[in-house]
Image 1: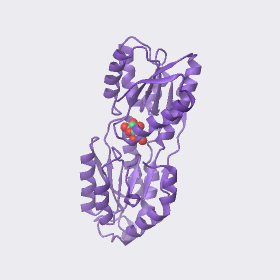
Image 2 (image 1 turned 180 degrees about the vertical axis):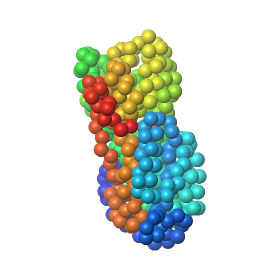
Image 3 (image 1 turned 135 degrees about the horizontal axis):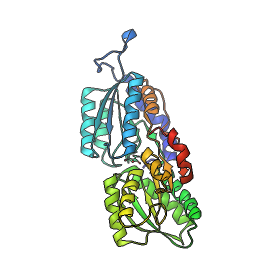
Image 4 (image 1 turned 120 degrees about the horizontal axis):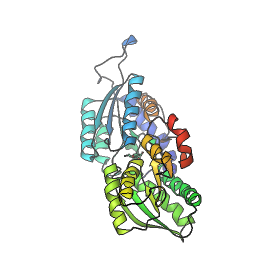
Length: 335
Ligand code: GZL
C-alpha cells in the first residue's frame, strides 16, 4: 500500500526511469491529429472501475470533460467493478499503443503482470483515485487521488463532534458499512477510523458489526437491514460512502427508526444526494472525497508523456461538513 514516505523516496527514481521510457516511446500510434501545427493528439487509455456510485459518475464526467478540454483522444472503458475487465482494457490499450494509460484499480492486488506488459512497451501508467499494492515501484509513475486513511481518521474525529452535538453519553455501538472488499478506500478508511478509535476511544466506542455493501445503495440497504436484525441497539453508522449511507437510511426507516437521530450517520464522499440527506437531518456529517480529478489527471498525463518528473502522489484537496452546513453548501456543490 502507498504511504507518504515511500512515495517521496521513490519519486525521482521512478519518474525519471519512466519519464525516459516515455520519452523513448515513438509517438507513432495515434492516427488523429490536432488542429493547427499538425502535432499528433495525445492518446490516453482510461480504465474506470464502474458506475457503482454518485462519486464514480462524477469522476467519470470529470475525466471525460478534462480530456476533451485538453484536446486528447480518450479511449474510455467501464469495468463494471470487475478486475478482469480492467486488465483486458489495459491490454487493449497496450495493443493500440496509446501514449499513456490511466486507471482507478478496483482492488489493490493482482496488477503486476499487466503493468509489466505496459512497462515492456514503454507505456507509462498513472493511477487515479485508488492505489495498488506492488513490489515494483516502477510499474506506475504517480497516483492522483485522496488519502483514504486520513478520510477514515477524519470520519472518527467528526463523529466525536456529532456525538457531542447529539448529547450522546456513555458507550457507542458502531455499525460499519465497508466499501468493496479489497479496494484501497475500503481498507484505508477502516484503518484510519480504527486508528482514532483505538487511540482515543478504546473504552467507549465499539464496532459491533462490519460488512461490505460494495459502495452501492442496494448493498447499503440490504446489509443495514441485516445489521438491524442482529444489532437493533446500534447508536452510529459509519458508511464508507454516501451511497451505502443513503441505502442504509431506507432500511433504518423501514425498521421504524429515525436516521440521524436514533442512529447517527457519518459517511464519506460528499455527493449531492448525500448533502440533500444531510439537509433533511438524516445524515449527521460527511467527510468529503473529491471525485473531480480530471483536470489534475490531464496535467500529469501531459507531463508524464513529455518525460517530466512528477510527484509520486498528487493528493486531492477536500474538507468535512457537519449537518448544519449542508443547506448553505448545497448550491455550491459541483457533484
Ligand atoms: C474513493 C472512490 C470510492 C468512493 C465510492 O476515491 O474510489 O469509490 O468513495 C466509489 O463512492 O464507489
